[in-house]
Image (cartoon, rainbow, N blue to C red):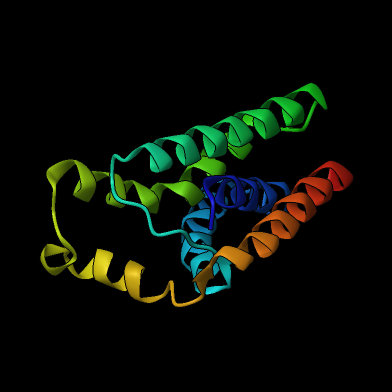
Length: 144
């Protein structure tokens, strides 16, 4: 899923589960559940122009939703932010491997597992990401 979807999932978990340790742990685990669902998948080469554009757009959306939640005076915005980051954090392994120039053959067991669960990536999966993200955002606002 996109960073936006992961971050909003983590923020939603923090809205429902108000115990920080449990909320952060569940947010981290949610990453893998979300990645096992159909979602946006575009094959891009690490560091190419398309990837940079995509990361800029996705990052801007994360900031937009975070600022929107803060402006809406959500309860405990720090916990929502930490859980949002925890939900996105497993994707940092892709950054690590990309910066090191590693090929999939050199991935460790964690990254191989992470890659294997993403069977349902596709361009039409963007619809799932958009619906998921908007639903999570609206539920966070409603439950505040």
